[in-house]
Length: 395
Image: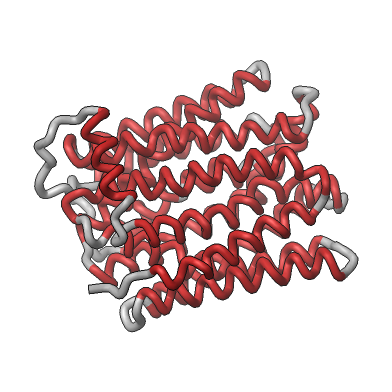
């Protein structure tokens, strides 16, 4: 059976869908968070732990998958991650208590981190320079379509079959992706790392990367960018549905509008990537992020707060994410071709580790209203802008 070749749309689609497992695992069930809280007689903050636990699991898996794939090959480790993700979703679908659901969500994150890390390493295996940034932006456009559909699909599934059906759907998707990747995805690692896998070796490698100025500014930008986006992901369902009284479908529509901002930003960025310097692209993204965050904060403080005062500025912020995130990831990975898996892991650890902390804090204070959401998003937009002077000029 013929394998997928580089520079083909089919390969981009497969890689893009696998990277979308992360956002799908949050966005599909976001409209159901209030229902989950009611079902288990839990508070908003307790239900929010299902989201934070997912990120903790994600962060736990990130340091393992990259170094393992550098040594054992991309495909074997990828299939292991997909298998764990599918089994954990099946467990979530039958969870008898909130505690079991939290644990199964942690296992979901542990499994889903594998495809994200390994797909980025595959892109680095196959592409160089601006072409890698373009490919990541193309995958970002595909990744944006999935969360655009996910909240609406999540509402339909919940209304029709209950919130547990969301996890059944993602388990079936994981099975389908495993068959597709097993049949069509080639092994892209040309030369395996010979150094044995050990905790000391892995930690030592990460220590060297985290202090390397070729990596650090890009890693910080990716983290700040994602934290602002995750603030919206983690807190918006409670703000829209409980504070503003919007229906689950109304929230899903607002979420879709926000995601289209990200899709538009990713699409424009991938069209520009081959003809514009990466630093210019990242500066454009940071300006959009900071502008959207400040506009949201102004709308909450100076105007009668409404769903639109959150939604429209978030469209601007998410368009900036489409510019910043692919370029910051490509910029971090380009100097380290022989350690693409480890660099991809470290990028994810920084992003998800900070996002888990931010999500927990936002969940603890989200009952205080939209000012928590707007203030946090504005903060990370300004941080993305403040990081720009640290960016090195590409070689």
